[in-house]
Length: 199
Ligand code: ITT
Image (cartoon, rainbow, N blue to C red; front, side, top):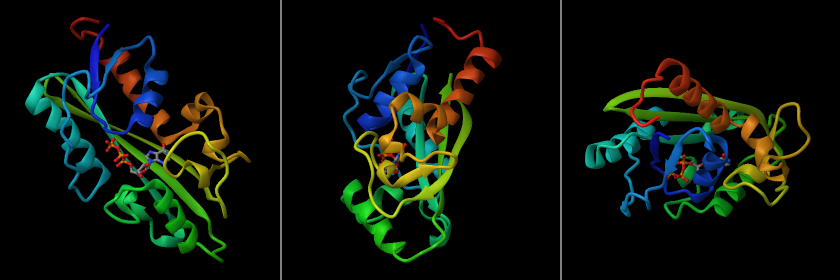
């Protein structure tokens, strides 16, 4: 099976992708390639950050890899926190604090519309391919559910009454921004790029 490194320090993402890509590709973590550095994310867009993370790995290890950058865009907050989602409440990158800050910022606000946007940068043999996925929904007025991670307890996707954190992970994966982007990546690798070595 073709090996792909997922360049993330987020173990929740790694678990999600492990479930989605099961049987399709052999997924390696940063640990598996003995990369223990914090990968810089200094771009102003999701695309720039995803690219930066993937090329960081390709440039040093010359191994096929991908990474994602995700942002929560909230309409009433001019699409904030967006690319700053991880550090919305400060450099500590604390999800509890980030969620609390969103709930405060939207206190009394009627327009709860938001979307998660995910950009994946895939590098195969040194060439980059980008894939995007999004999930539209609303920000709840309080946390609900214990599954998932990050902003999941306050995000309810359109057409559902449960938050992402109340859903089974398999259901979240079929609806989510990352799930949609990964489906595009898998389709690309299986249909448009079938001659990978070791596959
Ligand atoms: P890596 O960059 O190492 O992959 P990260 O946690 O920094 O991990 P992002 O920059 O992509 O990942 O994430 C931005 C923020 O959005 C961060 O606070 C995450 O917890 C949150 N987030 C990302 N994906 C999410 C998801 O599927 N559900 C809820 N929150 C998510």
